[in-house]
Amino acid sequence: MKLIVGLGNPGKEYEFTRHNIGFLVLEQLAEKWGIAVNKNRFKSLFGEGIFQEDKIVLLKPQTFMNLSGQAVLDAVRFYKLESTDILVIYDDMDLPTGRLRLRKSGGAGGHRGMESIIYLLNTENFPRLRIGIGKPGPDKDAVQHVLGRFGEEERERVVAAVSKAVAAVELVLKEGVEKAMNTVNRN
Image (tube, rainbow, N blue to C red):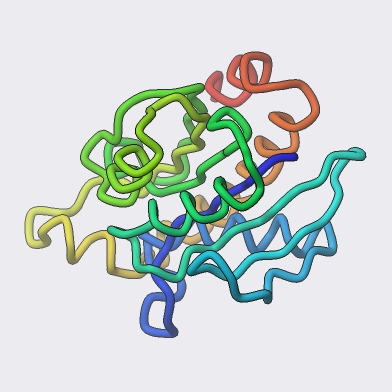
């Protein structure tokens, strides 16, 4: 069984913001795999399904970004998962808009949602897929940037990045993180 977590903030006011790119990827996976992410448990919206004969749980924490670890921990405990059975998808300001990076483990890199997950799981040893949202311009701070919507000039790259992220998740599930990293991180 695999737990795939897309990070974001709940509520209409946060839809399509940079910080919610994890939700966008999860929604695309749900649509492609025919999994309804509409059950309410684990302080999340979630859905269960099958991909390549493996049971999959898609999780959208509803705790707000900085408390994402609460939702992930609840799901991990319920399903009795190892940390390596989790894949977290989230935004990263240190990557150019649309760039993907897949890692087996690592620190939070200043991302509050990841800090929460790492702290509550008490490990950095879980795979993560980071999607670049670029750095804020000189007239914006980090909070304004991540809670802002993508500009027209970024939209095409974001749509492509979400599609690539869906393919990356499928590659992880088919071939494992190590092999998938060689493909995903090459771009």
